[in-house]
Image 1 (cartoon, rainbow, N blue to C red):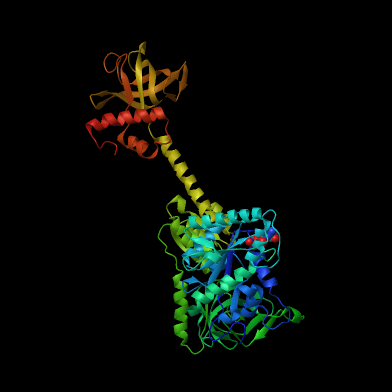
Image 2 (cartoon, rainbow, N blue to C red):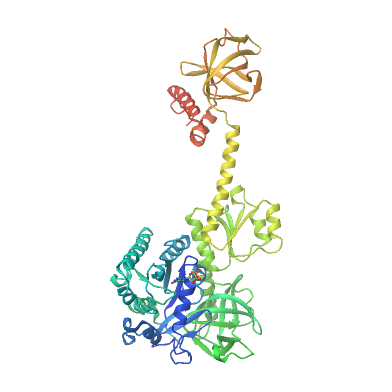
Length: 597
Ligand code: GDP
């Protein structure tokens, strides 16, 4: 049993690091690991598969006066090595996040950025407590570095000017947190970390504030999570697949983060796979070999058993279909069918609400699929099929079955395309969107939908009749009839060829004929805008009978067109045309209040 993880039946809390790219997630993890590696010393940090354990002793050493190890009974902290919300969402467990606490890294110079917002949303959705590491405080102009010291100590030694800037930057972050719906404060002022987010100023570069960060994490876990950390250490292990990996000499292996019980080298395990639960026997449990001991044969060391919380590589047959983010359970002492049912149930939890009409969604892990589904639900984008895996030709075939053009799309998060899927998509007019940032996928898809809507609007616009009011000029009758040719002035709107026209008799429009041709200074034109005088030929009336010089005529706009114009295209038409439309509708509605509604 690994001593650093077992402590009176309380397991190590699991810590994840999230934040916007380049805000210093990797540096912070490196700093935490680096500053605590005391080569060869007992109780030093231990490298796991995919995670690093920092035992309480080391937290105590780093945090100095901020932590008194005798006040704690949790064994330390287990940091997930891969930062970012992708690994965070991958590591789901029983409907929530596997990580018990998160560090949200925010660059004090950059403040909140898109991935910060996304991370906050994911943390809120999974109800994961977090602290904010306000990083890069050393970049404040004039900052005097005091390596690896608690923040208060280094702050006391800064000039007033530096301290003032420090406060400004931190209050900006506190403001942004508030905009995101979280009350927060400098961590030393926070009384209750359940209702307030603690902001810890740090520098991942100089180590300043890192003692504080460890102290806050440790304190938070001890105070609020102790009960959750009480596990049956000897019980059958439960964990989540972080990665499915080919490993030389071992075939397909699983990198697993174990959060409950123990897995033994002779266990039968059940793992979530593409086609449902996989039952298999552990062939080997592997841990990274300590650096000093690496010889030629393997980077891994076989162990007999491993207890939560830990990161372990499991080698076993039949793991090819296993999926990242899926549950792993040791069967030991339990009924196999019960365990299979458990795994099945957890897999089903992620089953996304799908409908008959919608887009196809693919993601690389169960957790990321769930996060995608959440983001899409929020953006009100319906899903027809959601699956873990690369984009395959059959996904393209699926996307072609929808009626609406806007649903002929596949959104792939962190996946590749297989075989001729790309070619087929192009041939079949299926849009494929791929990204490793969820909000980008959603935005790109929304852009695609907007394009379609704009095109559809334009098509409607092309076919819709436009309102116009015009007057027959006196002394400009060029022909009496068949067709009548007269000079007109367009008073408002746009007069087009081949439109029926008439005049209002009371509130009733009397159709007189159809404008056949329009001539502007001898040239045939298709339309004429308000303010212009042109000659028009009108099929139907005879000047002196149906129409007369000085008459005011209207385009005989059909009710359906008037309705589309008023309800959908009002923003698109020029002001004078809008005026003509309103006047036209007003007259019609004096007769029938519901006309065009
Ligand atoms: P990630 O993308 O969030 O993992 O960010 P990195 O850890 O890769 O850091 C991005 C850049 O910021 C790198 O050039 C780091 O050296 C730098 N950086 C990270 N933390 C600090 C810090 O506290 N102070 C300063 N000055 N630079 C930092």
